[in-house]
Structure formats: C-alpha cells, structure tokens
Length: 127
Image (cartoon, rainbow, N blue to C red; front, top):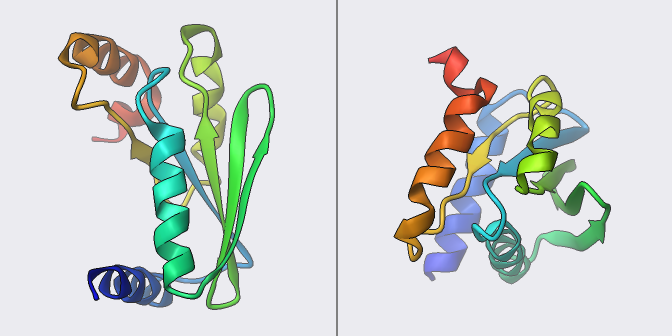
C-alpha cells in the first residue's frame, strides 16, 4: 500500500509539471555513496507500481536507467563520484529536471568528502 502511494505521488508530480518526451534526472555523490543502490530501489518501487522500466546501461562515466510514466521517459543518470570524474557533473545541469545528491548516512567518516564535493560544484551557486 505504501509503495502504491509513492508511485501515485510520483505520477501526480509529473502531471503537475510541464511534461516533455524525455526528462533527465541525474544522481550525484562521491564514490560508493549508494547512488546505484538508490536507483535500483527506485526501479523496484516503480515496477511494483506497474510502470515500464528499463535497467541500466553502463558507460565509463555514468550508468543510465529509464522509466516511462504518463508517456514521458524519465532518464536517471548515476554520475560517477570519483574525484577525477566529478567535473562532468556540471555538464548535466541545464537539461536536468531534478537533481539528487546522495550521501551515505552509514559512513560518517565520508561526510566531509561529500560536503566538500558539493561545495566545489555549481549546486550551491543557485542558492
């Protein structure tokens, strides 16, 4: 019942916004923060809600997942978090519908790394 509510809420939010054929939703965070696991969980929730999903295509710089909701394809990008690859984060903003920054709450020793990565990027320039 809870999963059904999550999916319905998700669909309503999409209907309220101006829909396009494709909506890009990147996931950011340092390496091993749990971005891929979060996307797999999200895909499972959406499947239980009877929505069309395609799992990930891997690339050297990011993984991609597709979900179709109300005739709109949502494209989720899991952008790699290694320090040498973080520069690609900035190229994803202009086309993004939603941004998700992932932090592993079970690893407090990495909080400072996450904070630093977030502060060095363009996310905070819009506040």
